Length: 228
Image 1 (tube, rainbow, N blue to C red):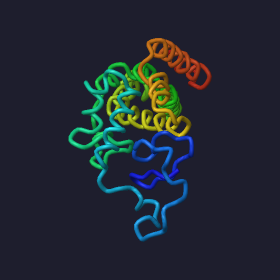
Image 2 (image 1 turned 120 degrees about the vertical axis):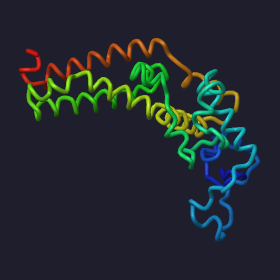
Image 3 (image 1 turned 135 degrees about the vertical axis):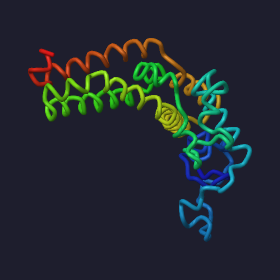
């Protein structure tokens, strides 16, 4: 099924366009639009100006996934003066905005927002760098840096990129739900279930992050590390 707003091809079961978020109709044409200089290139099929309906649909879908904090916080952080859309803003606002919860809580905040894979990658990445520096620098040089530096780097990374991580996570899940579900009411229910927050996820994720860090240090840290 092709979207009559941006000509993006979608599955026949989709209720919303995976590119612009426009609601699809059962009576839309099932055949591709005729080849023209405008739609020969797939990139050219993306409209330069999003219609009000596509912006409203993206706004509603993101609000359904994020929950009550969307209007109060994330909408402004992601879009600022631009229209809501299901893609990274060209002005980079969804990348360069700062998240204080990500700074203070680190992977606990990521797990609270159900970004478990992102949290795992950050824990693995920072601990891997930490272990490499232990072996390269040796006890004296490494001790002068202090392990606290890596916790600070961890927090700063999450604070600087937290909103971008969450935006990408939201869009990915929205597009996945839209490609599998046609009924708008069902889409809203699934987005609410997949999105929102989880205190259980935050607590369990924090505990597992600590255990993973300790396990990596136990297995791969040099012997002197345990004597410091």
